[in-house]
Each structure stands twice: as structure tokens, then as C-alpha cells.
Image 1: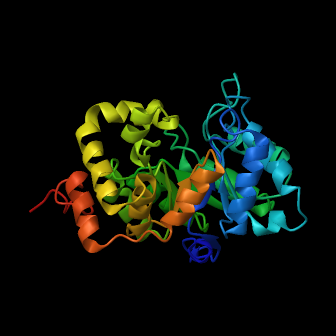
Image 2: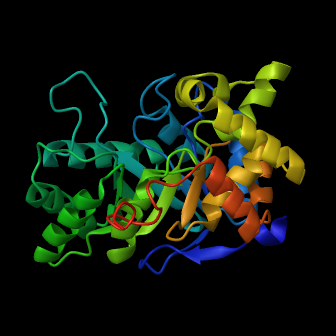
Amino acid sequence: MTGGANRQVLFGRTGLRVGRLAVGTVNFGGRTEEPDARRILDVALAHGLNLVDTADMYGWRVHRGYTEELLGRWLSGSPRRRDDVIVATKVGEQMGDGPNDCGLSAHHIIRSCEASLRRLGTDRIDLYQMHRYDPDVSWEVVWQAMDQLISQGKVRCVGSSNFAGWNIADAQHAARGRGLAGLVSEQCVYNLLTRQPELEILPAAQAHGLAVMVWAPLHGGLLSGALRKAREGTAAKSAQGRAASALLENQAAVERYEQFCGDLGRNPAEVGLAWVLSRPGVTVPVVGPRTEGQLESALRALDTGLSAGELDELDKIFPPHGRGGPAPRAWID
């Protein structure tokens, strides 16, 4: 397991090398207490998972910003840790009650970056991601703010999250007009149930040289054995939110999937993550472990290869859109 987990990949065109999985921190605060979160982070880093993904609003179950504060305390626990870890956070979500406490205005970007730096206890953010596209702000304004932060050394690289393919293209066009590198990554939801990124987001990212981070690779736990856990009374995350609502529409497919994994003798969570890892254009799935056991399962997925026949069977259970592949070939003869 350790050898697989130590594999490194290039992060787009940045020259950075990162572990094949990123550690997502959305559960740190409210679901995973700080001592457990610290142990998860320690184990992940020991296995070469050096990219840690958070957001300024994470930890909202305690208070917005709590997760960055937790990470700051963890980062300060070792002299080398800050240099060993690639810190990724996000900006754009609601952080207060004021009219300018969200979005991608220069006002909010710069204030939010400074606040994230204070909470993280660091002098720079390695990857500063726009949490979602803001239609009310021009790219000229966004890139002016990001350029200022980069020039000041507060931000090393800029990424996007939840962008459409055309958002990526627009952002890159505007950035290059200013002589900037622009986006280096896109973080999108992508899994066996959510295959829309294959149409335009993944092709756009590849065309512009972006790394692709994948959030919800198990669709909020739905692909981790949700039906079995429900029968056993052990369902937690998979019994609520995204997973619970999707199960209503996809129960037959999920039943086939769990039977397929059972026939293989493999954990559904490891199979679902192995599928994402196999996809062209995907750089780093973001796993959000609540427990060390969930992290260990994710690490095993690095060595859970899927054969061509197994991938074909998964396509039958969860078909791609149209004829598969990028638009417009997916629906044109």
C-alpha cells in the first residue's frame, strides 16, 4: 500500500509534484474532531499525500474558517511541514452578513486571502481557488486582484472550482491578455454517477493545460456501499445530502454496482475511487476522510487496478452521456 501511495504526479504545468490523492478537509470540524483530523493528516503526509485542500468557509458547523484554523495549528506542529505541504484553499462563498462578504470582487478576494493567511498561520497560499464562477465580476477585475496577490507573494498559483468549460476558456483568454499564467487547475465534481465533466470540463482543462482535481469521487458516499451500510445500520454520510437524494433516482444502478463489487471481492469505495483514478485527464481525486479507516481505504484504491472488461461493465451500469467522450461527438453521429 505504501509504495502505491508514494506515487507522485505532475500538477498540470506548474512543475509541482503531488501525491496521487489530495486530502480534502470538509469534514474537519463538526464531523471529525481535531485530534482525529491531525492523525489523518499525519498519516496522509507520511504516505506522500502532500496536497491538502480546504476552503475559507469550511468548518461552518463550528464557525466559518474553523478548518483553516485547524490546519494552521497542524502546519505549525513541525518545522518542515509547511514546506512539505501544498496548501490549497478557496475564495468566493459567503463569509459574513455584509453585501460584499462573498463573490469574486477584488475587495472580497484580497480581504479573504489575507484572512485565510491569518487563519492558516502562513505567509503564502500555494493554490488559491475560486470556489465558483461569479457572473457579476469581469475577468479583468478578478485577474487584477489575483495579480496583486501573486506579486506580493501571498499566492503562488490560481485555480478554479465548479467552472464550466467556457468559464475556463474565458478566464484563460483574459489572463493571457494581461501576460499572466491564468488558471493552473480546475476542481470539479466527477464520479460514476456524475459524468457530465467528460463532455466539456475535462476537454477544456486538457486543452489549457490545467490539472484536474475531483471532488465527491464517491458521490458523497453513495458509491461506498451505501445500500449495504443502510442494511447494517452503519450509514453516516451516505444516508444524507447528495448521496441520499441521488439514491432515490439511481437505486437500481447502485444495487448492480454493489453486486458487481461483491462479485469482484472488492470494497465499493475502492472500486469507485479506482475508476476516477483511471479516467483520462484526472490528476488528483480529493478524498475527504472522516476516519483513518476511510483514508486507508482510499490509499488501497491506488493499487486497485481495473481491467478493460471491468471498466466496460461499469460503463454499462453507469453509462456515459450519449456516445461517450467529449462534446459534440458524444451526440453527433
